[in-house]
View 1 (tube, rainbow, N blue to C red):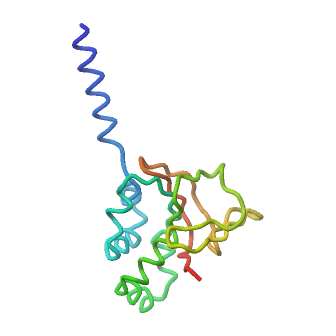
View 2: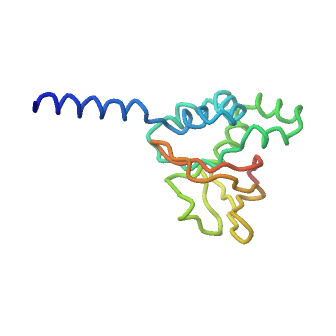
View 3: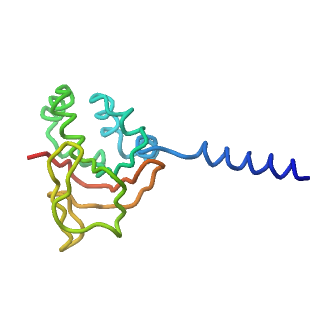
Length: 151
């Protein structure tokens, strides 16, 4: 009986571990971050965001990327250095849940600071946060409606 319970506990633990998803897998699984996933791939940042973290990612949806004129987006996707700067500007070190968000500057992985405002809903620079606290095993995703560009 005791061995059966241990085997069951190990089996349950293994199934939970198999379900754990990192930031990238969580975003891909959501289905509305195809452009972001392609951009992360083009910039070589997939392995970084699959790493231990923790990270807070302000993730633009496919609709957010669609606001960028096609020629400009295509050029950005081909310029690895600029693309990396733009994408890492959407990432903050650590896990910041919605309940912990405060207005003010927030230093990004890119090096400069995003401006967070909370007066009429949460905004990151000029992008509105449309969904919060999508938790992954190495951080959290907050969905935004525009791509934000470093200054």
